[in-house]
Length: 384
Image 1 (spheres, rainbow, N blue to C red):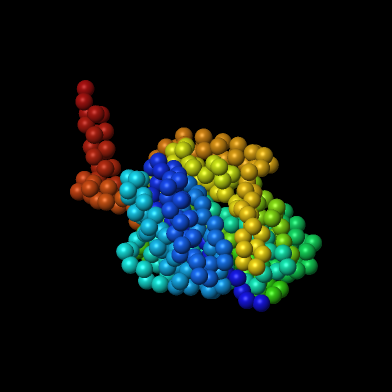
Image 2: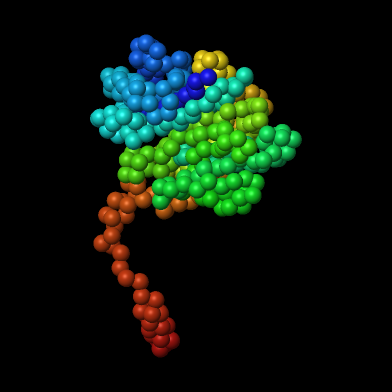
């Protein structure tokens, strides 16, 4: 049986209005491009949608990961939709397209990409999580809860095929290197890394008992390419059931709206709010950060879905807690922790703003200040 490859591509090709949503004309053009370009056996199936201001392509095929044909189809779709966005005068057309030339793989050109190849099981359910207004580290806590926390995922205790645990491949964004940690034995080491979500992010999760890839996330842009940290708006593929977390165990990981980076202007932190596909457009200060869960069944490469898994009153409490966190953080205005820490502002407009004030800095001399203070006190004591 041949392997099926699932490719999820995501890019901001132009916002409507501002950074809040995706124009219906862009979605129509994307569907047209995929329908025309995916013929002649290139694709098995596809789904096109929007999350916030990002255009999303979900493609199934038998060409394997990093297929030049598949990536070229996605690239051509994004560039054509950028032209549509330009004609409509949408905001910042082609924002995620960092080159004019296709080099064989869209990973080096700006768009997000998560891919997974596998032989289908008798039943193949999976969930695609799509986030907006946040960074790559947004998946760290949910993935830990899905695949390492028995309080979230009872299957880790009672399912024999999960009881051996999972391996986490973690990417060091600063040094461009990976480390694979075996759970449950390395659990404390894993938490040491995942807690620093601006630097260390989960690449993939692998079932230890047989090496099955259970989850994979979209990766970072190459160093020096694209926007600042916090604006990656990542995608995540999670396979479910039959020795993997159930659909409910994967969505339960988002019942707590944890804090992520990448909110308004990509410089602020806020709660990741689980929302239905109907509510992906972000209007509260271009946010707050949000995530949708698209559930699919796969049958011979064909997609059956999506089922809108967060369109459930069971997540109303999480949404309420998210908005309570929004109210608390918004009162901080431009102060940390609402604004991201200073060390995350290196690739933003912040350094040039500081440079304008450089000439106004003077050396700090505590001894001289003490001397001036003493002299002033002596003068006051001598006055009648």
